[in-house]
Amino acid sequence: MKMIRAIVRPDKTEVVAEALAQAGMPSLTKMHVFGRGRTKGIRIGDVVYDEFPKTLLLLVIEDEKLEEAISIILASAKTGTMGDGKVFVTDVEAAYTVSKGTKEL
Image (cartoon, rainbow, N blue to C red; front, side, top):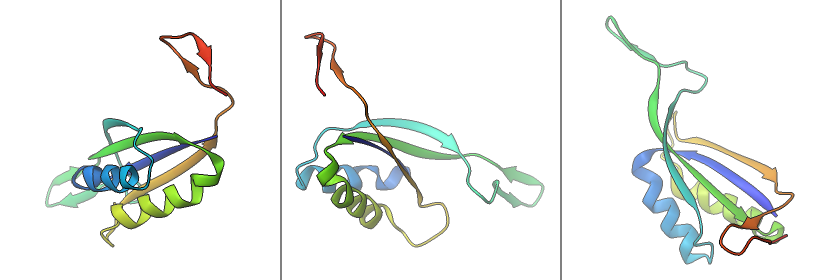
């Protein structure tokens, strides 16, 4: 199993979530976050904007669906301009269902 952490523009959140759901990956967690990338913000006159609103999407998927999920995220989140986001992938060693107290992996 893999965990995908995708940081996307807030206005692309529902587009990405719907595309993943249509591909059979309906489960995800969304969090509103703030941050900055390589540019370290932008300056407009005397005002510096150094943190921007983003949405963090978390999803855990089977290894064989990883490339499909990443392709969907990249295609549906892209605007072609700086600040579109980032995707991180990590291994998941174990998962537990709280209500049952059972290990899933």
